[in-house]
Length: 176
Image 1 (cartoon, rainbow, N blue to C red):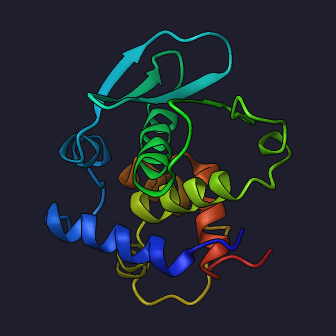
Image 2 (cartoon, rainbow, N blue to C red; image 1 turned 180 degrees about the horizontal axis):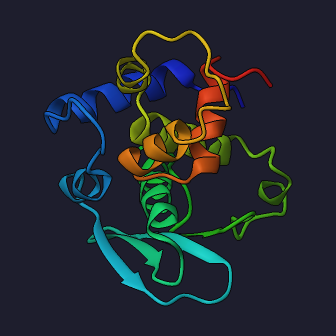
């Protein structure tokens, strides 16, 4: 499966435009609700980050209260991606570091196209490139010795430092 990067960027831009979001943090929970999802926040088993349940009458994104708020934000964005991009089974479970698709074990190997797309969508919507470009004041690369910059940006965007570092590396601000 080819990863649909352009489609994801266009969808994210449409969502941000419709929600009139022009700066971080992106209200991803509210965006999910406007797309018909009811968000249920509960204590979930172990490393279960969240889930998407849908049938003909409802769409539910479940979020684990035991996880940090930045992880919860990413979970909502990730499940929203599955809701909008993937016509999949009725129940989809996402674990903190692997995913159970209830169909096979391919997704747990990190090569499942739907999971890659959902993670890309989550990064794109929570940390839009244009917002980061503005916040980084035209820098082409980052000096990682500026100790306060990365954690400050992570707080502003409502994401983990690790998620922000991955995003900045993907965008070419940090060399891998």
